[in-house]
Length: 280
Image (cartoon, rainbow, N blue to C red; front, side):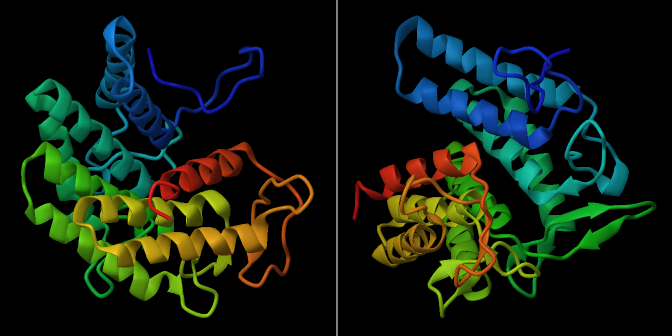
């Protein structure tokens, strides 16, 4: 019935189990990045692959009335998080911009309304982690760097897709709120989240991507300073001096550094440094 499983063996066998909304939203966005840089038949194939991701999301039953709307994290229906919903909003907005199909726009509007009614914390100007549990649900108010970076990026896409410049100001407001609440001034980096003050390449690094994209949108070089400081801190704390790979987690000063390395962290740091190299 479509959709991507979370994992498989290297030979492609063994795929199964739950499917995750964030995996499928991000996969669709990656297809669209490939669409942006290709031509001809291949370009159309990438667009069609992104649309298949979106159409699975629309028809998989993971958006329902529990907690007033929103996508579940996965087919296991454990919780409804900000990051999954915001990634799907990005995908629908980009597809609306490319195709003009209004059902993508309508889905994006529904997600945005739900996020702002259920997940927005007016005290900090940021979006909370997730809702789970019975009844009206329990809100988990931890504030994650990558959740809010994804929301910031979604609003930059909204600005272009909907031709609404007010969303640049909304993205800038999230950026300023991130730099007030999620930036550690002592170590010059973004923390994992407000109840787990550690550093991790992908999920803290996402803050740098958001700041680079803000700079690309408004030309304010202050955003690049945050992006570079965060990347430099990750390199200092989490990069192996021998293999040059990145460890998964550590305290802000390097204490308790994990010994394992994950593919997502290597890929994300490669991506971030390629993005920043255009400007620094």
